Image (cartoon, rainbow, N blue to C red; front, top):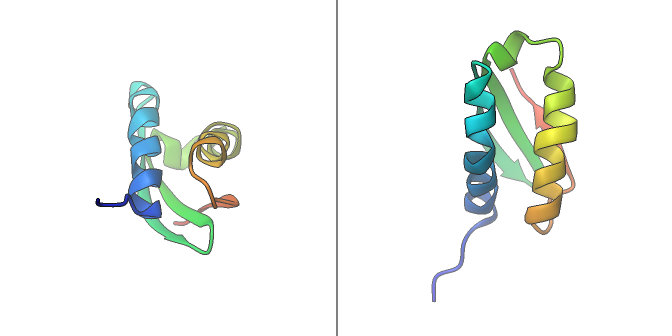
Length: 78
């Protein structure tokens, strides 16, 4: 039986959130998952939006913490 890696689990959650980001002209790219920390790059409108930190912490991080065991935080990389 094949197990899903942490990276794949995080990608699945981001794929569920992607339509909401795309609707507002943005997107998110998964850069890496290491020691419970998810690093993402915000793209398009999300990269320059003043609310991007709120989107990152309140939206994306909350979903990841709820759905992927072992995730402790999310960081934005540029």
